[in-house]
Length: 472
View: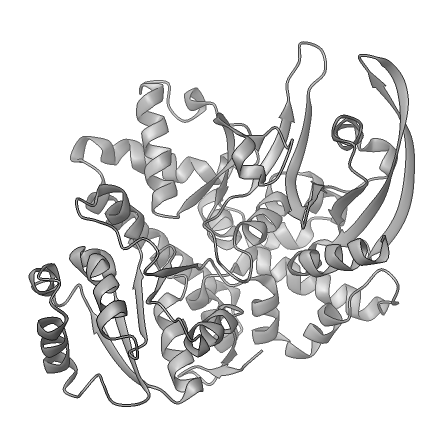
């Protein structure tokens, strides 16, 4: 992966740059729209990409040029190009130019105009980004440029990206991680320690930079506080005045509700369920949280088989989650490994935010889980993912295979042959055979259990692909 050096001299890298490289080299390149929450690094990604590729970056912040909305509304690319060139002070047609329209939500007609920039000026690479773009997309009153633009969904920095910034020499152990190669004990312990730091710092780029630059976790906390204030300031941009108090309450309660089935009464006993539901959906549109829907998991894509009334929540970032929840570094540092995985929602949030934003970013966050509710016996799996045509259950917990009751129920019902467990142990692979009680009577399930350390969550797709190939 390419290396980016920030203005602070810190080496940073984002996996999303690979997508941008593929995009700009494509013969049928369409305007690319970066979607994601505020301050996940969209603008910085584009600036660093342009610098790495030696491109002339023509950046226009549309919040500062709101009058351009009427220019874009003309859909006349000659007029649009003339106005944009007047702002940047040079020709956009020059070889090696890159047009970057930031804060796209400030001029909604720019989104519609991207289609005509693609059709009339195909040689001009265009990237656009917006932090509250989902509200523009849901409220637009014009024809969307379907099939004329591409999207990339960007989340916080992953643990791997964080690791490259704080201890890059450890990344090779992630690259080489497999079920057949020995992982040195020292490397394993160092990765666990860095992963614990990530739980506190999180993946918001500014928080990561503050921690690296100062070496102080307190500096990351200061950035968290600033980001939270920014999100709260945004509430007025997409909620009516009477909704603001409820939105504020829900925002601060989500970190404590991560991993639990949503019950609206737990957020407010005074407000109507539909109002609480609306507040959650607003925050999900702003990408501040993510709804993890329960899926029947009967086929692929898993998102097509969901129950929209049943879901749990993830917060945007584990560092912000812990900041709002009041979990300090001393408490986190003193947790033993079993408590770290089994108590609270730390590990589930950590794994979930990585599953929500895969490297290629081709789709919006769509993690799912499995829930079976009965009068006497409930069963729940933290997540379910797909690998090619395979459905793979995922558990985030410590313990021996005999304690994985819900996993065994899922294996029995769905007849899958592979499962993943995240814990704090080294990678391992074992064949599990375990009795299961079903409505039809007792039966025995057999499957391959792939155990991975939490810090290896970014490698799950690669390792599942290896497992599929070795099982042929």
